[in-house]
Every structure is written in C-alpha cells, then in structure tokens.
Image (spheres, helix red, strand yellow):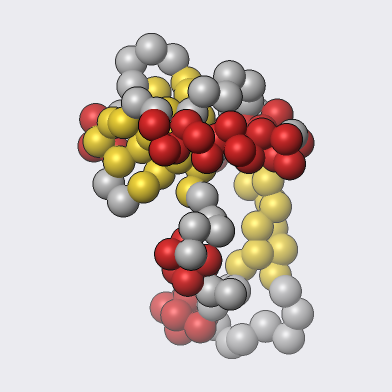
Length: 116
C-alpha cells in the first residue's frame, strides 16, 4: 500500500522529535500540526517497544496537546545515532541532476553523526 493511502486509511503515523520550549518530546505530525505524545522515552525506546506502545501513541494523537509545526523546533529523530548509512543516486531525478549514469549496484555512503 502506498504511504499516502496507508496514511489516509489510518495505518501510518508520522513521528517526530520536537521542542516547544520545555525540552524534547515525541509527537505525531498531522498536516501542519504536531500532537504531543505521552510517551516519555527516546525515539529508539519507542521503536523498540512499538507493539506495546502503539495504542498509547494513538490515544495521545487523538487528544494530546497540539502545536502548529511553525511554532516548534524539529529535532533529529535519533539524538545520538551511532552510524548513518545512506544510499546515493537512488532516484531518477537525483541521477539526472547529478549528470551521472544509473549505477548497476546501490551506492552506499556514510555520514557523520553531526550531520543530522
């Protein structure tokens, strides 16, 4: 199922780490707003415990404190990533704008954790 269709069907949530002035919090992005979650752990904790915490996050999204995205500071979703791996030249427009040939194999590269 395409991401937009999954989101419209309520099967997809956009999670983000943000600061509204009182420290980092996890929230659910909905349109041009973010709804604070009651989950108090890190994004890694939430991912690790997703099966047990999904309902908690969904409940927060239904009735949590809402902020306009323009009023909060979005933060890196993982505060201290150990490693960042990326795939280059992974879509046609990027290949065309870089004036490179389509690679026969995936082009992997790493980024410094400070780049997030």
